[in-house]
Length: 326
Image (cartoon, rainbow, N blue to C red; front, side, top):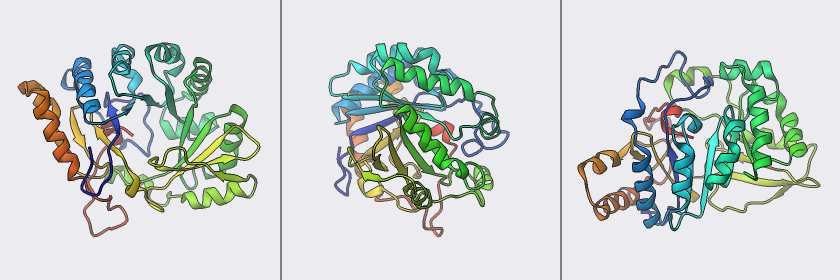
């Protein structure tokens, strides 16, 4: 699939469930309760059917997310089936890590290749304050189990927040070096008006984070994936790497090769755009594969050139991150 600006789409992010076992204040509105049921989401058979369709359209990489994907019943079996689809070369998963220790070995055996784990702090008390749950130790143990199972390189995703965890930048880099991990710092972007209230005054630019790190370490540009949103660097003298995902201070739309599929079966061709195309409805109507493929390719072609987060005059399309997937 190619969009109107010549970008080839090869990466599909699938939110397999819209529920989470954490309550991170930068992700979920305070007091938010998700009323959806598993029965309202795509079934595992439907996910696999769509995986076949997207692979035939040129998708080579699938990342499973949520919510928290490890809450999805039958996830290990689904991964096993997705890994066998011709054309799918990479199969990855993003998780908060709480259940990772329990599932890491089974995920690897099923065909999963790598994991990204959210970790915003190295302090247990701060973790509980950010996430609303005392699960820091479970996440640390999950990271260790993922490494032992061979789900490598394990990547850590850290949302930087001024006055919250910006004092831990060097400590997190040190942890990544010690554990031989890939660390990515992510700028906190607008998602939902009720979440954005918490965001007020807490935005922290990755350019500042990078300058702090470079006072202590030499960063060597190392971008193995030209489509990645992260500006990636090897940390000289170590086996670790650090990346910076800057959707606001240095957005990466020109090289974006991804689309998203929500747990309810709706496509989003841009994270900050409107929901488009109800694939669940098409499957339930019994449309043939070729008809579904034509509609997907047409909608992807009209993908917007960029998001408009830096243009306040353009209305932002709010969303809850647990419903969409990271």
